[in-house]
Image 1 (cartoon, rainbow, N blue to C red):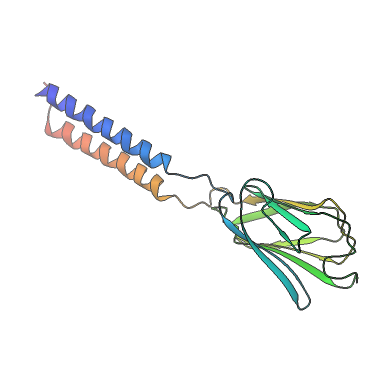
Image 2 (image 1 turned 180 degrees about the vertical axis):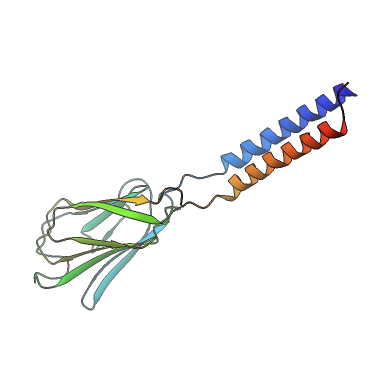
Length: 185
């Protein structure tokens, strides 16, 4: 009888490891790759919005000359030519660049950015970032890049992680119940 209990335990553990491996394989890396994001330029009364799926290489362009690229937790914007501004050549006009639907699996905690433009400010919510500046010369180069930082520990457990934890607890309870029911000789 002791041999069959040992074989049953071994069989259960083998089944459990296969299940855990299958669940773990279904988990995805948190970040933007594969997600659909929204990029919008706006100014007084005008706007241009582009939705794009984040992948390898540049993800899209606005106006046919402002190219954007997202990484897993980053963004860059470049111009293919020199321009006197995004919407106009009037320095008093304000430009807003809004990045939305940033599903990083945790709320944004900070945005670190560098820009060749002067006077750029940034504001953000849990899943969107807004850069603001006054119209000015746009160089033929990458003129804005950002890195998105999330709040550590603010992630929500994925269903596969919960299933894995639950199955581990169930196995421990089953083994304890079996150990109590079958005393060793």
